[in-house]
Image 1 (spheres, one colour):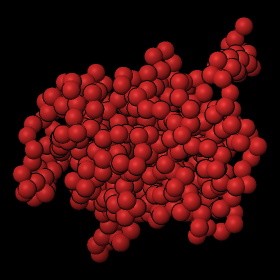
Image 2 (image 1 turned 180 degrees about the vertical axis):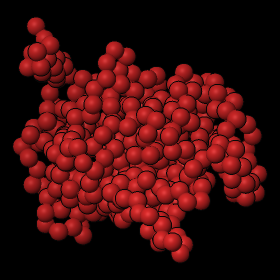
Image 3 (image 1 turned 45 degrees about the horizontal axis):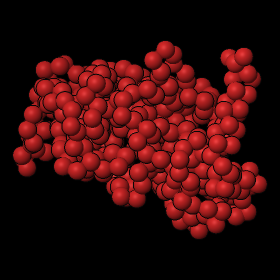
Length: 379
């Protein structure tokens, strides 16, 4: 596969039309209604087409896949995109200076919707790669998938139904499943994020779910954002963070456009894939979303400020806790907490800075053993 010429937008449109005609897709067939959630069909009037029966085009999705040394997984990830019951309009893969055969595997795919971009220097977290892909795309929605994760066949169809039911939403997301070599586990979402019905929420509701679960309810492989909102909010924090940038992006996007959420799993997070970002980056530096939280808090109501403060302190505490078994110490301190801060966050941060590493590792092992006993798996 070679880079597309500057006339790519025109060529892409012609290819897409030819592809739809060849595949017999019903997405743009005359008289076909897009099956949105909560609608019912009505008969056409004898004198012509009833307004309620006019064709409503489905939302257009561009799939964005950053790629860096995922040769052993990208084939399966790409196959899960091509197997969607609602076909994607664009598939943009950005090779982030891979040194394996991943780009060649992508280039061998003859699908006319596929565009392969190449970057000479890899960017931390794939953030710059995603931003480049979003800039190259033209579809209304940008749906994200990493090169080592998987979509269920109805993932894009589920997102499209959310967009049809909640047209004001700027973000769409579903629940997801953690996939290990020997088992799968649904994400431990909390509150409405663990329910059964799709819903629309604002920033406060999103923060409530995040705080209750102890982790972000949105995960990259199960998220789509309106392209105009993604660009207007600055995109992913390339150059500002080596990790945690996804959560910073979701926070800004939900604040700017709200979130429509489906509490049903439509994607798999492969936890034991090779060369994962979390294996290559540490948590010594302050979470980048703390800067975003401070900016959002300045214009928030009192309740919103309390939620944002709790979120920032929760993330700081998690980063401090994750440094405990490693060799380094946090590069942030108590002064970086948002006050008033809970005693648990203060104690965790001070312990990660001052206690001997051997003691921290022993305490961590004891905590894991206690958790396993409570779960009925330990001795």
